[in-house]
Image 1 (cartoon, one colour):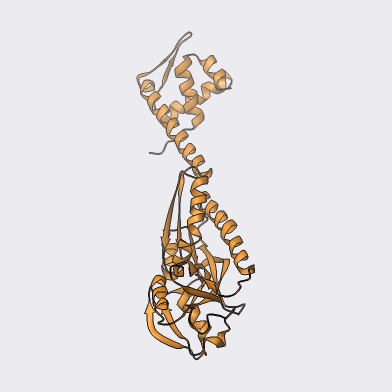
Image 2: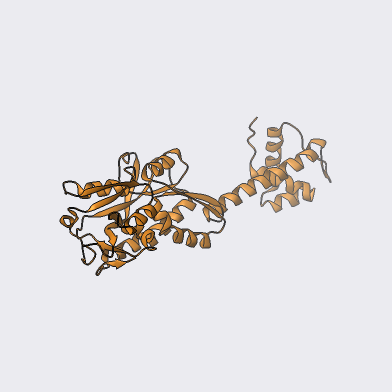
Length: 313
């Protein structure tokens, strides 16, 4: 049964239990004595029992009143705790935020963001899912994450999206490759090159297929799941690859060269994706603001920074 009991009534009753005097309890609650009496009478009517016994000098609690003291205290304590928790969530002292992020960004960029976020809001739990684009969207659709950072693709119409940054593509080869001395790679330079591919399900592969459509490039026959494998294969002279800048850290352990592609449109946009039907929590909004402040600025710096001769990785 849902009773219409207010905090004002509970506080008035506990004041009366404390002072055992209507006038003093009314003053404590900043009410006139008549208004205070009306509050207690309404509480008794709602509870369905007489809670206080009053004579000319004394106020005593009935048996039901004695029992209701603990009920009133518990109700006010629960309400206070609930509002304290809500205040903690709003102030980002408590909460949870979950992200689904492309593996390249999850390894290079997002860890720094999470570290700064945890330093500012140590009471908030952060969950990170490093996943391919389709899986990122699946997690977002299920409500398991608040935000997804992914590349453009199909099935985005149901979501709200905006560009976080642009991820330019690089040509990666061994230092003894014929193209290794070039400062920039034009798309026609790729003719005859043997490309080592990532799996078709990756956003990188989907962009590379678009970039090389119509070019007479050769497929090395090697198609792998992981960038570290691509690096190892290039290191053995088994081919070359086209990868976005965010992934270049995967190639630093070998004596390889990364050369930017000479085409303004040769970029992989990184999108911030969220559900249209669900507003972000205060915790998630704080994470979004930090991501935009740190990664979108970094993206502009990457796009504006000229890259000289091949970058030794």
